[in-house]
Image (tube, rainbow, N blue to C red; front, side):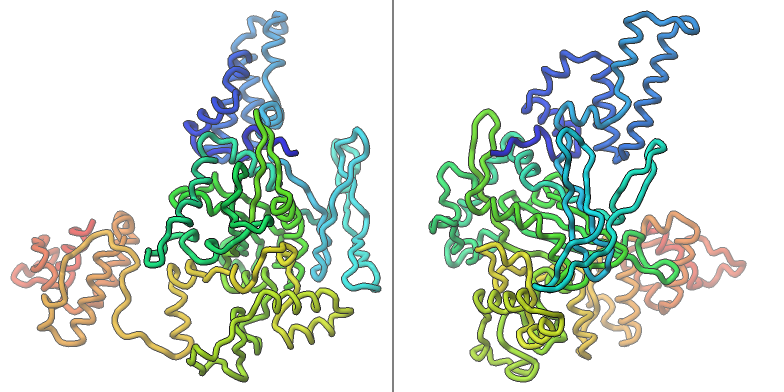
Length: 556
């Protein structure tokens, strides 16, 4: 039985927050609180949630509020009434007090991570009776292979807190509780009903209906729960599906001074939510941030997702019973992994795309029935049992050499996700549409393979339509037509903000200066632009710069 926090996922608008206050009966609590506490409470919510100010900044603001209130009520130096002293004492000095009083904190576990770059094992803290101080092992006790020795890497270092040395992990991983987050989301008014209605789309879909969501696909239509019935047939139980996203990025932006750092983000998204709110930040679950400075190698990623898989196992069978006014059982399933190609293969346990077994879906290899084979009838799909058998061999191997031989043979490594009894690596990996389509990597891959696509690239974005069809400049030469299309792309692009600065204006003057004057003249005529007065002494001739300035002024 799990009692969720009253508000685990802090919303990103005060209106939504006010709704949650009403739903969770915070309003009566605030009405009985002192006015100064009400003011500081809403100030903290505004600063922490809306403005994104950290806990240290919020604590500073609380201290300043207390100081300002003291100056306002202090009648003479050193003289405060008992009521005034109580008023000042009621002003919280730490934002955590407010968070704990209203159950705004999210349950999280701080793991000690083995700093060995080839290990990355997690170590959960222990607590002595009555003590909130976590106790971690001094050295890493992870055993990679049966019969091998422990890692033995030192996990802790010393840090002084108020002059006293304490032991803290050298490297930490903060894992948030999925149970706590899901309980908070389900307690938001009306959201549970919306999530339950998603299954109606799955049941109503016909064979000839257009597919717009995961519930229109065959996978969820044939997905069965632990009771052997379709997963949607839960009766009074809540049945919800989730996608897992893992992505690595450089927290410092692009490479700086030749140095590259990489950290990872692990998140879950509820597929039962409507598409228009599914990927809003307040509706996504951030499980944790994989610490840097480098990505964990290959199978070491399993250490970080193992605690999450532990919770997902419970959510599958027997489920989790949430109690809030009344109890209800919730079952949850991880039905897809949404990552880029590199992260997806590392998460699922697939080998690199350069491997002989280059395809994660079928048995085509580079040596036989592979790259040049376009006969789809000869492609044999890999099965879930085949994946699990190969992954189990990798997990039970006695040394690194044996594991590498298994990878060379099967193209599979062990993944913690395979502990989920329903997880099917051959069906649950989603095509990376974001990188392939939205970021244009498909075209880049074609160019790498030596395949050039004919035709011009469409503009990335159109802020201003010139409405100039190709027929309007068909009489120009081939070179001039190419320059014309380039000019139209520039004018239709999002350049308005850049033209407001001197540097931006000069940049686009330089770009347009490479365009033939015939193209510039034709565009000004077609869109009916009046030329600006020439800055040159010779008034009888129109220069290229005149057309450029007229076009840029028209755009801006």
